[in-house]
Image (tube, rainbow, N blue to C red; front, top):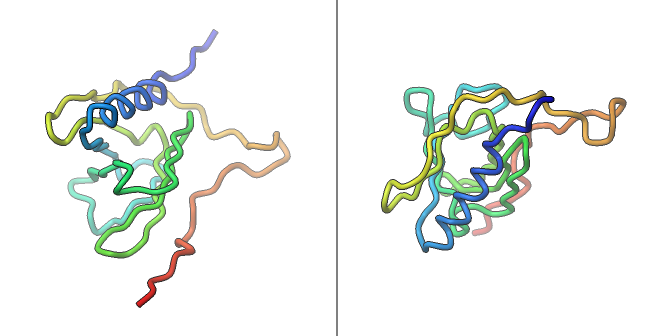
Length: 132
């Protein structure tokens, strides 16, 4: 019997602990992993560190297969798409406390509506507009 990956559960628990401790949750992401959507101009050595605090992101969804949210980079809106397999670590900015995740196999994203329905897609450009 195959067990479910631990990463989504540990990530959600540590995220909540960091927020409840009035700290800032940061995640380290493998920006070169399959299906990752991050602003490439902020990627260094194939990785990106993202501030996931409630003041830094909107519409945060931590699902078993993917994290999605809306953020801003250099004043521009950006929709992040982070497959769970791309997450390397979560930690509190102020203390460095957190966890580096072990390698895990993640099954491919399954279609949401059954085998005849298309699966989730990476988000396109944001629908938000700059108002001056």
